[in-house]
Amino acid sequence: MERKVILYIATSLDGYIAAPDDNLDFLSTVEQEGEDYGYEKFMETVDTVIMGRRTYEKVISLVGYFPHADKCSYIISRKPRPDAGSVKFHDGDLKSLVTKLKSEKGKNIFCDGGAEIVNGLLKDDLIDEFILSIVPVLLGSGIKLFQDDRPEMKLGLASTKQYPKGLVQLHYKRSRK
Amino acid sequence: MERKVILYIATSLDGYIAAPDDNLDFLSTVEQEGEDYGYEKFMETVDTVIMGRRTYEKVISLVGYFPHADKCSYIISRKPRPDAGSVKFHDGDLKSLVTKLKSEKGKNIFCDGGAEIVNGLLKDDLIDEFILSIVPVLLGSGIKLFQDDRPEMKLGLASTKQYPKGLVQLHYKRSRK
Image 1 (tube, rainbow over the protein chains, first blue to last red):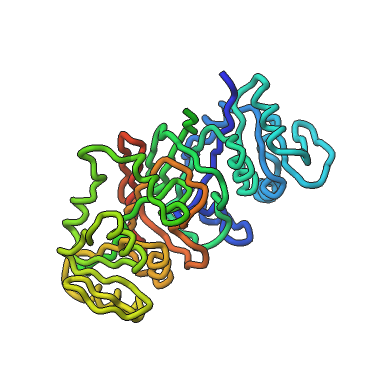
Image 2: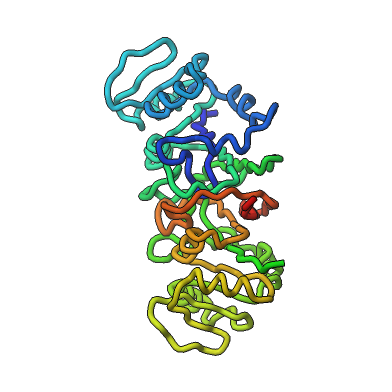
């Protein structure tokens, strides 16, 4: 079975993955001790991470280190940068990279954002599954997960899960038939 | 108890209430005989409808008649137009109208779109509940339900419901405390 590219990401109900200035404070409204919203279990199913350079730097600034060092990570960057251990910077074509990765053997591939990478992948129909965690807030402005001018795509609902803090996790699979 | 303004609307997973040119074909992917996704039951809880003039005309062109003739309807229009039975055209301030309606006795108030009315109401924090039916499709472009430059608002999740055709209905209440 071909490996899948899976988007696993949190958004506000109005579709923002960050408030203006990349602010992620809204995520704290659903923080709950002992509840990781399936993150760790999901991470066991992937061995490769794709993310944008801005998201990469944001994650490091928030966490203090790069949390996916045990995976093979591709950071999409306009400028070439030297690789650092399991972290490779990719300044070439996104479609070629993902097509190559999907043709190789391995676990699934985690798309960790940001919006530019997600929409770039969607333009070429390269995302196979969507696990969206909807946070019960309207942010009002910020960075929209889904931007205009993408092709229409049918999805199939795989599951929904409701959590005590009001987060709803929706799992969809791309339906290409 | 004060009457509530309730937004009851269907959107694609990427947040569009219509494809370009006000096309609503995506709704047909979740059509199922005998399943109205709670619409009739919801309609029993409201006696007043607010909608934009473009949405009003779209609904009539699709259905062949105005389906809310048994309710008190306010069609928000820039130009003054003569009232027609239970249908009143409102060319004044949206906030004043809704504030007045909320101060009166009656059942709840149904906001039937479109996006301009929804975002106008949200700017003044006038929507009390959100019943969003998420259709399992990415439309790619069209009319976004939630537009930029609104205030941030906390919501509480009231319920989620998953239907056989892959529609998920999310019910939120505005949490003003």
